Image 1 (cartoon, rainbow, N blue to C red):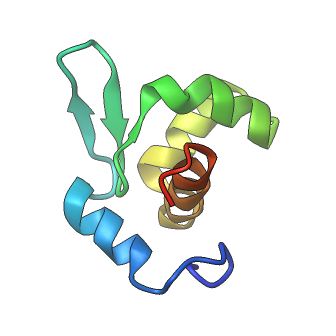
Image 2 (cartoon, rainbow, N blue to C red):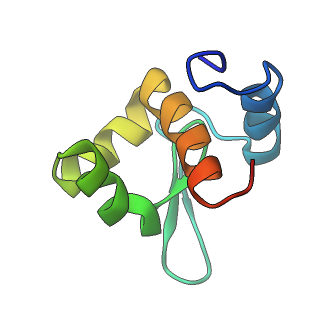
Length: 85
């Protein structure tokens, strides 16, 4: 997955170690948002990800919670789009 995203191989495992999510994890944040699934993608990203993937926010939310491949591919995209990596 990291090579498909043109990232160093250790980036995705490092993100997972820091975020600490599991399949179907929903973590409530103090600001009312939630972190979803394995990579703990924040729900504030749902509108952006829905536009990017051309799916509705409900579908994106379900994919982030349940599908490991989806979460692993979204996380590096998010990191790059923010200029974090």
